[in-house]
Length: 293
Image 1 (spheres, one colour):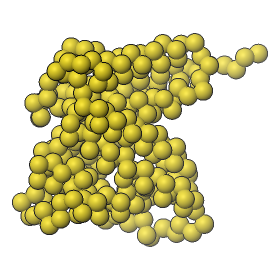
Image 2: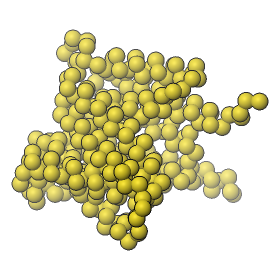
Image 3: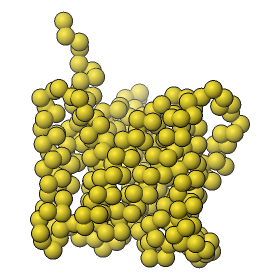
Image 4: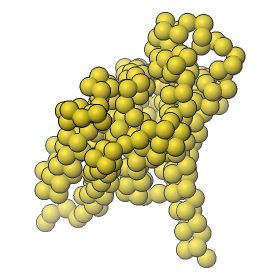
């Protein structure tokens, strides 16, 4: 009976994580539909501004005392959220969603592999390099990618690294309130930029349902579902499933945006997904391996 209950819990967790990733990519696809009206800057303002309001109303972090906490880490984390999201949405103006996510994904991959001296990680590094070479705009073909879009997606990957590093420090100091406070700080950056670009268009009531949809699908819902998964799944399984993100993004781009990738681009995404999954598995094995005698 206990085994059946545990299996059911794992199924719920896996389903929650997959639903969270699908929600995130659906939110990105919906945000791209807003670009003609408010631009990538306005879509970023919608996402972070409304997400911050939702999280503040839900968590109400002001009830908790945060004196003598690591404020520099919190502000760095929040600004990383703002910059990462803005750069990512800017990249979506000229390159497909799946490719943008794959390029952005190389940031945390590089962080995971940095300083490793295990021979197996050479395989994952080689796969990432191969994937990047297949995606970078050096092929001189009709399907070659926009260089600026690629640069923005890779820069968003650097922002993701800062988000991870500073997020860990902010989480230690602020606990569960770190996400709410960090998102609010990111909104302080994104909302003025959005208004500077789109002006009063951001206040159009006709766009409010889409804006709320972006905020919920891209932030509130996936964060909640990921937390369900984190409390029920081993980190190895969580990391491996998370590596499916670029493939899900490519599927969302095809389904909701009509984006079509060629065979080489799909192969590049598959290489990056394999590298992410392999890194998650090998890191977990390294953590659980007995120390040398």
